Structure formats: structure tokens, C-alpha cells
Amino acid sequence: MKVRKRVSHVWDEETPEAKARWFQSLTVSERLDLLCWFTDLALAANPRITEQKDAQPVAGRVRVLSKT
Image (cartoon, rainbow, N blue to C red; front, side, top):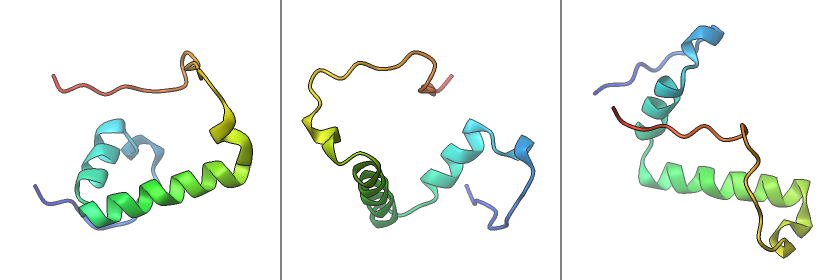
């Protein structure tokens, strides 16, 4: 599958499936770079986040995708 390399500013094109295709188009190295970037972002926003124990998910805040 070839992912089109273009910029879109249409909200309707930002579907979970489109985002998954974009993520799958990244190399493993690029995926790990994103993981590190998001981790750094979370730590910058809340440096004490690693001290939290028994964190519970917030309903409605995470979308789980499954293959049909």
C-alpha cells in the first residue's frame, strides 16, 4: 500500500483509518522517535507523571481501533 504524501486541511480526511495508514507508513525508527517525542511532551506537561500509581483510564478519552 502506498500512502499519498500530501498535506490536507480537510477535517473529514482525518479519520482513524487515515491516521493508522499514516503511522504504518513510518519506519520503525520514525515510530520510536514519535514515542520519545510524546513521552517528552507528557513529562514536560507533568514531570510527576511517573510518580502516579494505579492510574485508571478515563472513559471516552481513548479510541481503540480493531480490524474487522
